[in-house]
Image 1 (cartoon, rainbow, N blue to C red):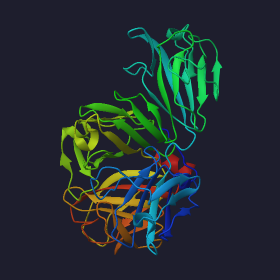
Image 2: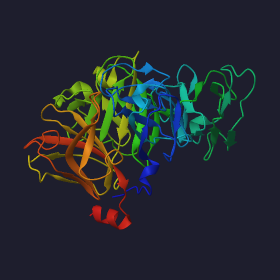
Image 3: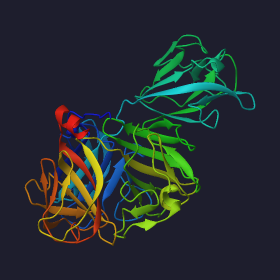
Length: 455
């Protein structure tokens, strides 16, 4: 069994705690440019603020409500090289308030992606990528990203793929950041483009023939086209840390969606950004026939319309026709997908015993961020981190499904290799109750520990 070792967990997840000023400020010292930020004012009752680099800064979703995406310029205003900037909004910068922001790195500013190109007969010759079922699709390419179009397949013979600034190739070939190798249809043939900042909308076409290609959007927002599912998605993926952000147009029908993690997601948090559907949530411990809502304290529920009774694979996850996971085609869906990485992240379940000597949850690392949710009966989604409560017992918490202020309660200890439950509260330790958790690491196991875990 192969494992990915992450040498520095804070290069992939980090928590920032700061005091709001009510005026625009930049928060630095994060250690990376975040792709997903989840912020909350701990001092006052304000909405959670969840934004990401695929939709773009200023596009807010809130985990405590089912509201559609809102465009706001007063909360997160940009994702920066070593942190983020905020405006005057109370959600993440209330004057004198204590603010927490949890940050994840997805694909970052310079992704690399390879597409296998074939030429098929589809009302004339057309380019097709990664054997996707549709030809001449519109591509999403990220500024700063490097994209390799592999034309080794023999069907490419006589059809070199090139880029242009007009679909009819008027104005000539676009060559900024473009290199070509070999002869189309022969081994090693490829066209590589590193998309320049502020690059124009491009069109990929055959240099010898007309009408074979399509549009290539060059986006300042992040993410690249993915063709693993039967619906084209746009994905920003960090395979080393097991985290990807996935966007697609809903189909209101059973579908598969590519996530680009290279490993099966253990947890998926999904939202229709255009409508007031709930936050559909998958967790490996409840399986593919059930779902939870992140914005609700409700217990797990059963329905095939959420995940189509199908477990995620290393390339795709499946959705049904539920609005929470795959609303109609006029709606944009966003999903945050998490694969498990030894020594960094873990997603599991446990049974409470109702004792002050509660369950010990072995993680193999010291947790920096934990969410726990009772699933057999209603209860909130409780959140702890190692920055807002740096000593044990870890008694400061927030709830993902409410706008409430931070609470104080001696729930648990965050220890060197896991979580020790220390209280009888049914929020985390009701006798006979079942709980799921997600956890990310503060410190990592070494190679010897990984070898031991593999046994």
